[in-house]
Length: 286
Image 1: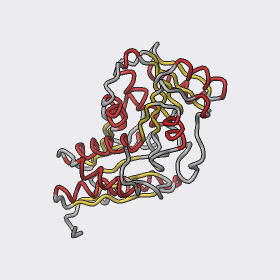
Image 2: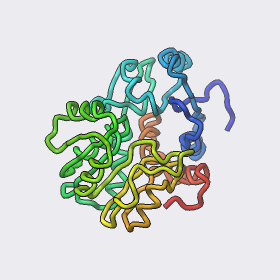
Image 3: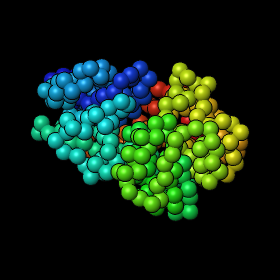
Image 4: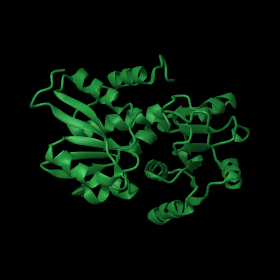
């Protein structure tokens, strides 16, 4: 692709960003559709975050994704907040439109799409979500909107989990502290368990947020970590006979939805998936 004065700029805002796979997917999508656009990485120091966003606006960047630790911090800087993002309380996609910063959350559809492919009856399922950050907020909204029977959220900081409870005011949602006892109790009642924490992410690949002895054959284990593709949690869940969903699937789906928002075009998901496989260094990501 030839870079020139008319090249549209998109990117990812977060910190740190050494191992992101987003540029590979989006640049593959631009190439597949012959668009004069490029997707870059903006690793922004927390001390200058607000100034950096002003800079992206001044440079007329067309849109950007937002990841850890800025999914909530970006909200006061926006001029428009999509209703879904407002309900979640976190933004992962921003579109610049006539100097306006419009915030969206594509994590909701990104998370839910791989689950729906399993043809589950969510109204008969109790779900356990580990973590209470921006990604967890999207998962909670997705599951409650889809009619999940009951949703438990466990987090090391109980205060953050309680904020989720206040935010949704839904009798199907319960929260608690994340410790050995509460994890064992919640898992005994859950069919679906979702890890939204960075536990098990590269380079700490030997870590798992759930002890192997608590994993069961009837569980659906969904780990949002995508690097490595097969985390220790996913590996041990497979060994226990559980159904597993790797984080790359959510990554692909949320990226595709961001692409739709930015361009108004249908994303070339086959090209995006191929690029994702190459970036992750695997022939088959399941």
